[in-house]
Length: 335
Ligand code: XMP
Image (tube, rainbow, N blue to C red; front, side, top):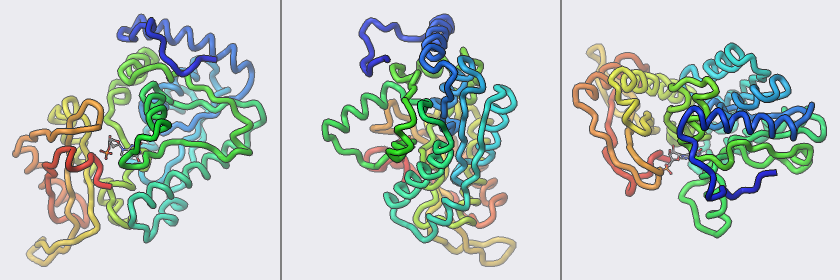
């Protein structure tokens, strides 16, 4: 069993050769530990869980059972992409759970940001626990924990308060959790090393270099009480923003960029008539550690293009705003 402290002598994984060596070492360790038992993994499609999945598939093939929960708050085509990649290219044992209605029904009418986060986090555990409950005793639960997560939990244990409660896959109920031992093959790696390992495992740069996406997904960007129509508008507007950032090369230089839609309408005009709609707020920030963030200067011509596309292509949106607030005083997300 590895402990949770990265040895000072551990070499930083910066090259494909070092990544290969790490992968070989982990494959041996995982096979020795797991034997012929099953391993369960919540596969969100983010960098960390995808790298764990790719690594474990290489080590134990179909003994790994990936569960992808679609909470209905994913970006456009995101779940489809996870299924295509892992079932198609990696031939993974992947269970897809579309829990959209469960989440959106629970969230209906809930406007407080922390209550929304708690509902999403708790329901995620409920859905995942239903899958975990099907496993036999002495199975394994794999997690994409990385070294900054370990350092963060040490800080929290020391009593430093966080501004927002960040929810990822947390604890399963005790009676289910006791069936599993934890498997955290990336827990001593920094994010840049996880990316190098991901590339060596054959994951695309589009995946390993992707921007962070919060666990509660679009739920914290569809401000106030989430409605299906406003969520659909957010998903479309976000897809346009991402497409334009990719086409202009900004996706390579901007750390995180997304759309937020508040629960307000303003008067506008369309087809020569009154058109009440929501504003789409664009956020594009650069940061090293997400503790502070600066605003990216986006060329005006690109902002005009994004505005024209969103207001003409997305039903319900009649204005586009650019948020120029650094962190502090704003946080990166609006909720
Ligand atoms: P804030 O808004 O606190 O965000 O400045 C800092 C970074 O954390 C991400 N974020 C989250 N990630 N669950 C997550 O997994 C969450 O609830 C959550 N809230 C914010 C945010 O996208 C940014 O990268």
